[in-house]
Amino acid sequence: MSKRSVFSDHVVTRSLMFVLPWALMAAPACDGGERKSIAEQIGDQALLELVDEEDSTSLVIAASAEKLVQSTQARPKGRRPNDPTPEAPASEPGSPPPTTAAEAEPGPQAPGKPAASSKRDSKQSTALAQDARAALASGDRKRAETLFHQALASDNRNAVALIGLSDLEFDKGAHQRAADYAEKAIAAAPKTALYHLKLGDAYFKLLRYADARRAYEKARELGSRDADERLTRLKAKLGK
Image 1 (cartoon, rainbow, N blue to C red):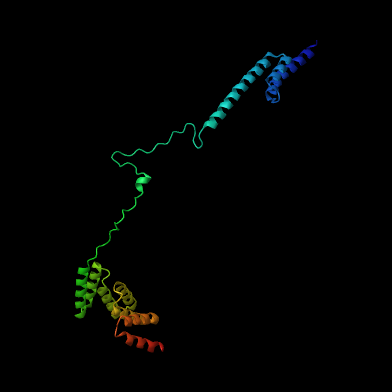
Image 2: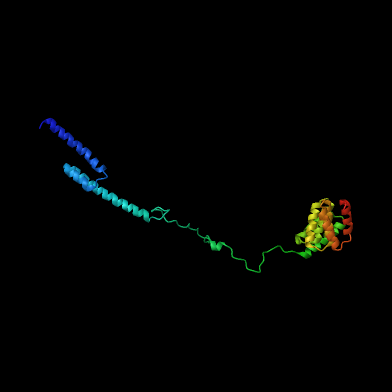
């Protein structure tokens, strides 16, 4: 055999030794037995060892992948395997225990116990209203107004104090405020004819003629002698 031929065979052999291992590893269609058969046909011990090593590596990888899938399926959703279990915050020494939802919700109120309200002092309120009327009769309007308000502080349904403030506001030209006080006085004492008459006068000044007519008619119904005079004046104003 010539040197050239020997050299060529050596080059081919070395090339196969370099290329075939990668071809064997990259062939997914061949199983381990087929790759081993190819290597035996070539007769290269290094290739045989490489095929055996690759087969062992494939088995190890497959086993590891199976364990990974099993652990993933068994893992609870929303938590990592090594995440610690959340614990409730510890309360400071001496602090009261945390309140539960059942304890925080107030229970039904016991029947027969109404909510606490401000206590009315009707006797004190009546005395203050009388003093206010006396002050008003003497011309001390400022003191009368103060005493009327003090009377309402003791009893906010004191009709005498309410109608007294209505008179004061009417005289000052504050007819809307006079009507407001007169309405409250009527709410406290609806059968007092004088209060309806004074409410009608406030409505008349506010040009609320229909409301004034109803107030005057109610005053007449309750026995007011001045109601007819007021109705006559209202008829002359409206022409009917």
